[in-house]
Image 1 (cartoon, rainbow, N blue to C red):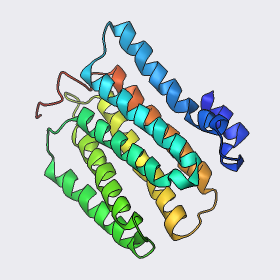
Image 2: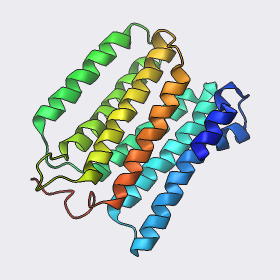
Image 3: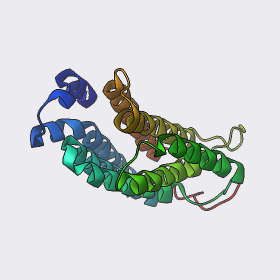
Length: 216
């Protein structure tokens, strides 16, 4: 419902204001509320849920910053911190070096493509941001097992959310730094909200504390 409100009012066409920021952040606030209610219903917050919740909080702050164009760099920092929290939540094991190289090569190629369009602090900020979101994608996908014995829909949800997040930010980067993309804002926000929903839903499964640090 909060996403419908955002797309109905079409906030990107509005003048920057606290009202616009609130409507843009409302879907993320809804997901934060969902995690709090779910965790209270379970009797306590798991470590995984707390980290995902912090990731959503930083994402909401990033959304607020991006409402005002002059705070775009601040928004990148907030979203970078969100990716750090998601990465910590997903854990460091199993390493899955093949997935690491896949995401590493993808991020290097993507950055090489847009490098010539970057100027000033964006040269370094985009490189750092690409590294953080690539790391998040690596850690999320490394935890997925397709075998019937180890399969977890919660891990799959987090992995899909991370990949869709990368798609959203990839479209945003090309549209902002390289060339305009038709209906870019619709694509960016639809994939962004979908990605956050998938990551938030992962707290309802066994994707957290009982196997974060165990290699399968």
